[in-house]
Image 1 (cartoon, rainbow, N blue to C red):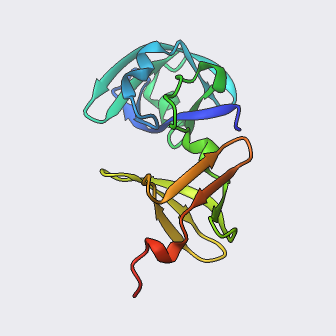
Image 2 (tube, one colour):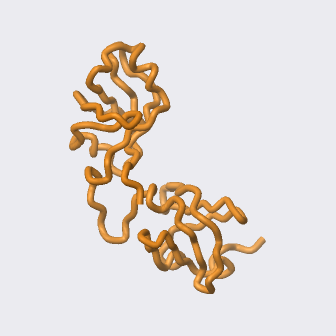
Image 3 (spheres, one colour):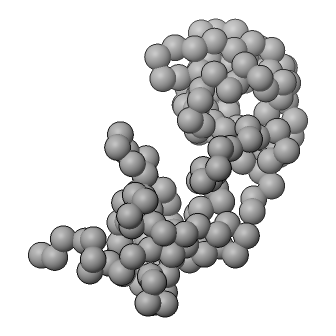
Length: 165
């Protein structure tokens, strides 16, 4: 399991006083209200202010006071140590913990490692790139077991749920 979790990506500046427009990488953007600091390039930076704008978070970080300073942070990720992460409900997982898990079907076939998790309106989708590209809908009748400690996920055999061309 990763000890550092991404909670946002800096998209742009906001205004001229060093505020940052952030894409939240968390299910609950209001989560920022509870954070005192974030890690930026591995260094702890205090949060001085936070407000919300549609699906974005506007953050004011300590010692970032000009548009020029904020401009240099574009496309960087904001992270937190795992110990500051929200506690997840049962059968919920951090995407960072799912990426890299090996997916097997109930017949023991290794289908590959999760490359990414695509979040859709209805359900998440596990994306495997190799050995063969595969998109797996994360539904209870397809994904049967997730073991983060062993980095192992068990699903129904692909032929039982995937439409054949």
